[in-house]
Amino acid sequence: MRRLVVCLLASFIVSAGILSFQQKAAGQTKFSDVDQSDWAYDEIQYLVGKGVIDGYPDGTFRPNATLKREQAVKMVGAALGYGGKKRDTKFPDVNPDNYASGYIHFGVEQGYIHGYPDGTFRPKRKMQRDEMAWLISGAFSLKNMSESLWYSDMNPKMNSYEAVNKVTTAGINVGYPDGTFRPNSNITRREFAVMVARAMDDKFKVTPSPLQGMKIVVDAGHGGWDPGAQAVDGTYEKKLNLQFSRKLQNDLENLGADVLMTRSSDQYVSLAQRTNFANSHNADLFLSIHHNWNDDNTADGVSLHYSSYRPELDQKGVVVTFNRDYWKNHDGPAYKWVKELTDTQQFVYLKDGERRKAYYSCESCRVAWAFDNTPSRAAVLSGKLARAVDDSLTTSRIDIFKAPRDHNLRVTRHTNMTSVLIELGFLSNPDELRLLENQDVQARRAQRLANAIETFYENH
Image (tube, rainbow, N blue to C red; front, top):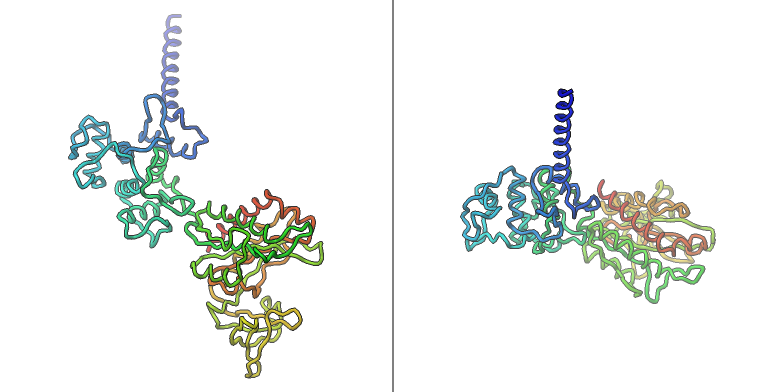
């Protein structure tokens, strides 16, 4: 009986010890102010498990508090495996009893801490984002750099440019959605913890969106005294074009793109001004937003247009034809293109060795079309993009009207970058109009389009 009691007591003690250990371990991996909804939860828990951070005595981590230089150095030193024994340092403003003194000395020995020109370290000073880049790139021996950075507030002449380039290339920091890095802004404890976790383990690293820093012109069609088509309920196309364009602008900016609008209000902008705007800003992508109209009020669906013919980019292989669908299979006669007369809206071409003219915009005459049999890269990408994103604009009640087509539209043929004109649906169809005017439907389609564009550039 005594033996049984002793065994039971021993078992209780062991069980209690295990439970105590588990509770302690659980306490070490959870802060009262960091829950699973926190965007940095996984990274913070990872650092706790690695013994890199232990928080404050009250059980908090204080993720929103601004990081101090001594805290940053302690975190990095712990990540590199240094025990952190307190000791003297070369800095007169670092007391040997400072909890970070050993980590500071370790950083000096390893060559990633140098202090300020006046010989101080300033341990209590708030940590800036450019200092974060210096510290992490040095401590983790980052070497690789990209040819250029997309940050609008960074340039190669800045002292921190190389360090920022290294942490960006390594997938440790990719800046803000507006295309900035904000080098002089302070960094929080949460943000720095994430940077350290990314430096330690590749699973936390981030790949910047391919749209990061890309200059995209969003062109809301019509405007001002040019209303565009008028819907069956009296709504003008120009209004819906701008509504959708603003939503698309926001979604593209959230993916890191630098979005420029040809118009942001109800103003008239000529076609020439729109193309000149995109070309003068050296845009990477031009998206012109429109809505369609048809005398048949049952016509419905999305259509996208691009141009293989880009006279400012490439004139080799350009032909003039009277077959609108020539681009599909190259059927019918085609003649060597000579030039375009924009004032009279005519193409000049050669037939039987003689120069002839044909209108490319005319309601009462036979219309000519220009196509490029050896299109430029921008033209090729335009066609590929149009075909890649058209499905993103469909819904359960909005389908494809026509497959993307090669079309001689002014804004797609006279822009020098990847360019697509999008007809979102028919204002002449009462059922489709209700969807086109619905703000939630607009928002969903704009988001899907932005995501489809991002996916396209991930592969091109």
